[in-house]
Length: 264
Ligand code: KIV
Image: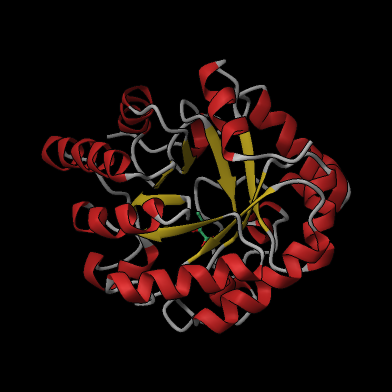
């Protein structure tokens, strides 16, 4: 049975988790989906892990469409989420055109980064049949505004603002919220308040789903491995074994462990 947005809502309502992993080509899309991963994310992280850039900013809509087409060909039943890359959704017409290109390439939903000011864009996409995941917390496309890749929402004022923004974006039509690098207590509060499923990366183990970048969990991250990443290849013994170990660890809430979490 193919995974849909309804599957993820049901999981949340039943208190069950789901797993998300990035993949960027047909071969890995097949391996990842056959190993039981529920959602494949064609992340603009491909700018770093495939293209060798030091940020996601150089990634284009054409790059994302190329990789989405490849993933769609290899996928065996996972929900496919594709990132709208940097400045491809600066205006509503731009967002509609570029989201349509990703959906035509095979995505089932798009992900975008931003806070309260994204509400109108999310509403426009959602009203026109494009499911949206709203990415909050550490938003890598904003690395130059954030002054680096830093944990977000550590102080109470920032935390309250993130809770408010998550609520606004859900109300605007976001079907999924994704939280990156936020203290686990804050992620738990947002997850409890939201009706939509919440996915976390570096956000503790109380979110409804977990996501990792494939290269990170296979231990081939260029540079220093982030705190929230676990190398599952060592545990799984093979690529397929690593992905299955990740799926089980997420399902049983063994991952993330204390050492992968951020405190306020
Ligand atoms: O681009 C990406 O892979 C992402 C994940 C880090 C969530 O956005």
